[in-house]
Length: 481
Image 1 (cartoon, helix red, strand yellow):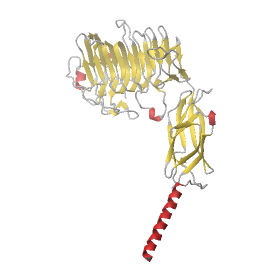
Image 2 (tube, one colour):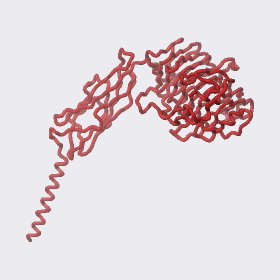
Image 3 (cartoon, helix red, strand yellow):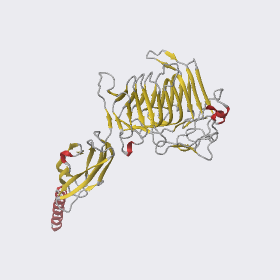
Image 4 (cartoon, one colour):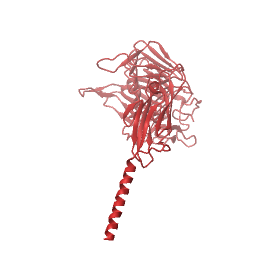
């Protein structure tokens, strides 16, 4: 009997204890010394263009205690006037009250910032804080962003079909005094010229296109060490190397006298698309020199029945082709490096495509002459077994590789001169291949087979892509050393 009573008393004590502990676990902690923990104590946004919202950043608010804790107040110190906006566990607002975090649990706070224009041409600091009050403890998370004024080109015409667009004033000159941010289609109208001076930075919003109409002209006047830059308008570190952030530079049919010198064009869908010339090749659609096109989700340079002359170009790491010369045309490239080690997805198409036909919407074949596709002193090399695709359905199909280093399984023929044949599939030994920031398409200065293989017979291009003086016999490709 005594033993039975003892067991009963023990069970009662354990039950009461567990109930007490359970109640304690569900009871809010009110000790003034209890504080929140944060996954980070500050959020730092990269430069944000005025009037354009930032990317979303987030941090975690943690309750490290064995009891729930209540945030009596969470607010932006700047209140309604703050450029920052917050979202707590999916609920947007400026201030929140009585947020309970269960024991050993957490909540997420998401933050964005939209900055009003200022008077400065240089980036300016925009600060605020998130203030947490818990058990009369006040804690804060610091918010910091730099705002940047810019010239904003936004759509003013919204047709029922087709993209929204704005028309750039005739004879416009963009300079480096302020960056340019393009949303939608920015159109250079027929009879007009857009000139872009050295050091100008053009930031393209999602799907944005610089459209050069027939009869219009684009002139880019970059300089060695001070190029004109085209890139996406997200400046956070995570976006610096992501392709496909914007549309393209589109030189539409019959645009005239387009020239690009010393430019960097990166992280879009198509770097440059040059459409039909239509003037029997009396003058090039595009002359392009000392330019880098990189990390495009489709094509680096797309020519369609066009006339393009290029030298000292680096076109690298594109998903479909670095250079696609389609539906015929007239093309000359000297001292260029075309290299493709795309690794975001599996690439299946050669980096250089040359063809002279297309099929219309009724699947009818149309052949247009490839009057010439000539490559001199170039490196055309990548990760696939064959990086040169020659695609013809008959008709004129004239191409030539002279003093070039090629990655291809095409059998040499009269269009591959003896020096080219000696350099078929000989690795140029690039310093580093792959997506930025690992990419470096200079060749090894001591052992590359591209050294001393160039010829001045095809033209004199004395300055390489680094601005160095080139000597002959020169190194193949865009860089002398």
